[in-house]
Amino acid sequence: MQDQVETICGFCGTGCGLLVETEDNKISKVKGYKENPSSHGETCVKGALGWGYLRSDRRLTQPLIRKNGELTPASWEEALHLIATKFSQVKENHGADAFGCFSSSRSTNELNYLAGKFMRTVIGTNNIDSCNRT
Image 1 (cartoon, helix red, strand yellow):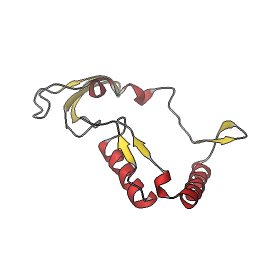
Image 2 (image 1 turned 90 degrees about the horizontal axis):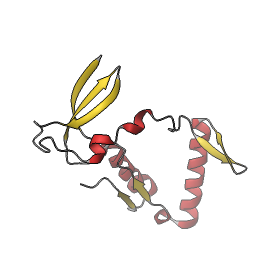
Image 3 (image 1 turned 180 degrees about the vertical axis):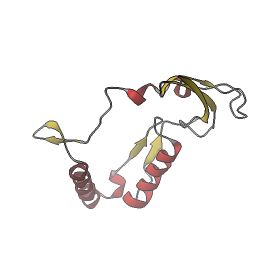
Image 4 (image 1 turned 180 degrees about the horizontal axis):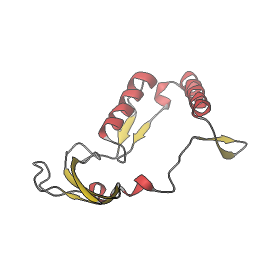
């Protein structure tokens, strides 16, 4: 069964309108929505084609940590504990500005906002950038 949903693109802050076509509950096509006042049916390549990674068989499905030089599956608890420990060590030895964050245009605007908030409030640095500019 084919369906069509009107939505707003999440790749940047412009707010382009998209029509997302689905078939059997999977995205089959994305195109610009002509009635959207921001984009008038136009969309960039990310908005039109950036959905292909959603069902990729190359996506990670669980945390991996390096043990003896090899990436091995780990529990979320183990992976998050390792990250917290390493972040604390780096911050203690080199200061908060030793960190930088480059956020992704494949994330939603909300996730990019949270990345910035995390870096500024938890880590304590303004070293953040993103490729999701309009």
